[in-house]
Image (cartoon, rainbow, N blue to C red):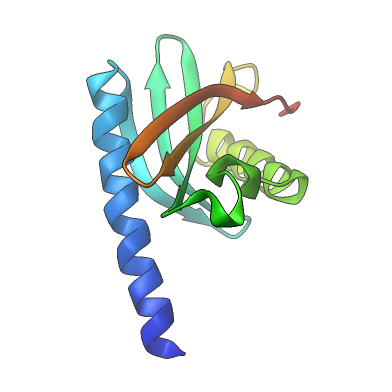
Amino acid sequence: MKNRRKNQRTVGQTYEKLAASYLQEQGITVLSRNYRCRQGEVDIVAREGAYLLFVEVKYRSSSRNGDPSEAVTPAKQRKLTEIARYYLYDEHLPEDTPVRFDVVAILGTDIRYIRNAFEQEII
């Protein structure tokens, strides 16, 4: 079981790196990868214009288990909101900083970038 987790982590890191490169190609500035706090972890924190982005990366080798974006469940959305709230506090950013939640869904070799994948109130 330990080797499986290690392999999943390695695969995850590979696709998170790919997603970060993809975002940079789109003109987005990546600020942090794998930001962790007591509320949890987000794959990428980035900036696009005035917006602070919290980006979740989801990968599936095939659609057999559904679209990768479907893995960003309402519970995960709430968790990402908590992480965003803490990030603003931790980085001494104003509470009214515009925040957006995005998803990079990778299915096989296809990358789909979903801007504003869901909306949540930060304050």
